[in-house]
Image 1: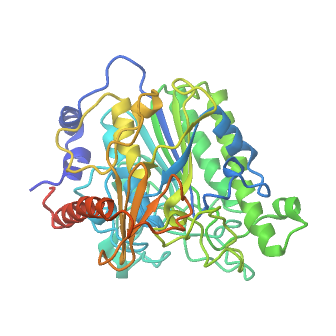
Image 2: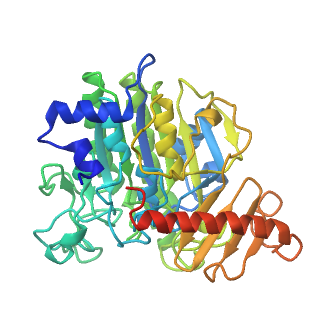
Length: 467
């Protein structure tokens, strides 16, 4: 049986395959197709940017983006670690449906339809820049965490997932001089790979966020020049370990410890590149019709944020990276779309990285006839239009032995695989300090039943029943 990816992206099929895939998706008519830019930081905590209350780290460009667009106070990564969240961004589905359950586990299956594949059927040019972490990029040589002959079964690069232009690493790199090991200057062991399956060799020194953006800008410029709608997925490595900032950024925080200087400085360097991106979109005349998203892939690294360079802040939220408490999955979230969103909007409605896929397709006015079901995300287009008062379905999570379910007000959480649950009122108690399970057993039972049904659905998906 031919896979959906073979069906959508068959090189041999040429125009016939494209016509078939357009029939599968339908075609946008009428209004201009919006450009889509998905930006994501790596391990940035909810409390790290200024727009969420940080008074130390300088993020003027992200703060300006928040003032110009829509700020989410309850934006969730689909998982408390990176790889699963990245999968959700591209599919609209929880990664437990297709085996990407943790970092460096599994890869994007051929049967999944990515956002890049879907948009290519609508005439979009597509680019991936930065961290991939949804499969390996080479089977020929040792690269990063799993790349090489030993990890051949997980070979799944972005250029085989719908992306035309790529400047991608399998996993983490230092946030300054990304190809070099800190202190020794030996090669770090992870390469930037391009869509022609070769390693990048030029312009790889200095701030990693700038190195990435140097590839994004020409991609957008060429798309604008050719009047092509575009999808740019920009997944920064900052502020994931190894955390390093250049001297000019450390100097901005000279009153703090060396570790703080590096952490704060690398985020400011990322912010600088977000400002550069916003300016270039305006200069190229495409900003108004561009959906520019920003979030983080999970909460901040580190046990308590007080050791080493893992200085990230979850604000007043409980938990950090790897936890399904709020601090592990509630992340910074922004959307700027000048043609559709007036500045200064704030929403408390829960939203998630799984919502990207259905939102973009809804904005294009297309429906997928053959998309594997179910989709875990929901379209946020009604929210963008000011017509959504609450989230229509809850957000379910699973990671290791942890499971949780979050609705518009309440959240159940279990750390023992669903044997016992805590209940929190996230409106009154966003820091999850008071367990209400004993006081409100009916709510626990109702939410537990919903979560159990969802978990059964994920197991069916993983067994291949969606395909």
